[in-house]
Image 1 (cartoon, rainbow, N blue to C red):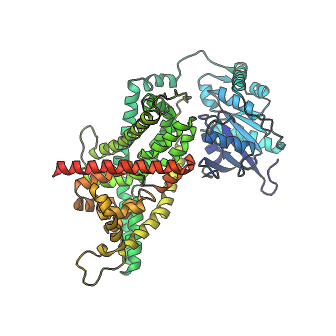
Image 2: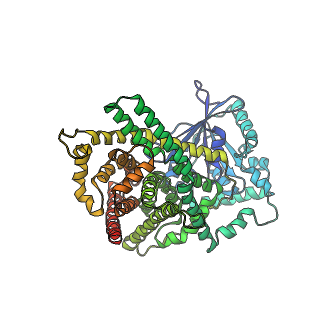
Image 3: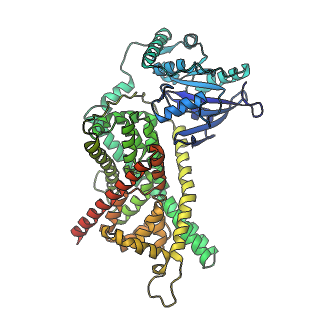
Length: 623
């Protein structure tokens, strides 16, 4: 065993082609004992998990980004190559490479295993999803594959505990026998001819070791006949998106009411326990009111993530990319941009990061620039607050709620605006270019695994709560201080907040934003809202001195704002770049301050122009 003698931990790297089940295998090996971060210098996700084998061996497992070859045509593939070859400064040495091969589509995995054999590290080839292959009547001779590759081969079923026994046993066996030391690498970037030759060699191995049943239409093919139909497919996609946003607004209501009641109870208990004064104001009106006004939206955010995780696990996302390819092609976008843009519904940051899968640099740049226009989960608290305040909670028939319909329209507005910006960019800068055709593997449909979905939701809930306990907490305290000091004079005839620093800042910005209907209180909330969009809700709650859930704040806003102001603020949030973290990631991913400022400038311009039009149009219609 070559792991450090002091810690006796065997370091394993998981590598495989996209959609081979690598992440499911990583979750099955490590369970919840994993952490996620980024490699230094790049925003490429780094997953590391710890595990203990049945034989008692300690493992440190790193899940590397998916790749078809170490030749690396995108930034995340380059990270995988550099980590495996050990050329990155922060790349830890590995004792074993586990190459994950999809049992139902073995060609890319076997070709990759051939290439990795030249790296110089011990290899273990894991033929994953063997249960699905057997169910289809596919017979795989693992011993023949091991003989052809000259490497140990084992089968696994990552989604079932019983399907992991052989893999655990093989890992224990390799460690007990002693993993050989790393040899000097013989790897060199393969040419296109060598890649084609390697694919032919993989086909030869498959022909020798795999027996296929008589061809029958698989379940996935039957479903795809409907899902990928040029007419039915887009309708199904639209219905799925509509149901998702209806659930985000309507399905979360009972849980949101419960969290709102909990926040009210905590606020009341703290108020009763502390004497009136600055400390109680800081804790109740600053911390609890600010953080509590955002936490109540956690159920909606988790419902959105649950839909996305289930659709990814199901295998539908690749189909959605194919369905959107024609529409996105007309806008000058590559079909692969769909998945980064869809990821941006959860958060623009991972959406921007996932644009690394796009080979063409200009297509990737355009995807990065329009990703913030997607309606991320951070906008949900603002949208829900404003929709609840200004849109009646009534049904329009067939169980469709008007508020949920408006929420769907706002998400659709983000998609349409992104496509229009891409189309305008194509007309201005790339008139003669035609978007490259989309080539993408369609994974087989799989039943989503509850464990993986729950683990993904827990990771996102933890990230949201950490955000609420840090950025939103501190921003809420800052807004409270600005809203409290200086005190109003003894002979004051106006509310005390009108004499505060917050009022001074708001009145300073008001001449710029008053043409679009914004009050000085909105101006105050927008400033800390640059740290995170949700902070605007906490800011409004503090400025208007409203404690409790979103219902109380919405009632206060509806009483003090005209409808035109509410609509204008909603439109502002469709376009405005209200998130410093997103701006920083754009700077990091493009390696350019120029493109960062281009993104900030065009989004603020769109936000101001369309908010101006919305405010004056609604004002004219409502008198």
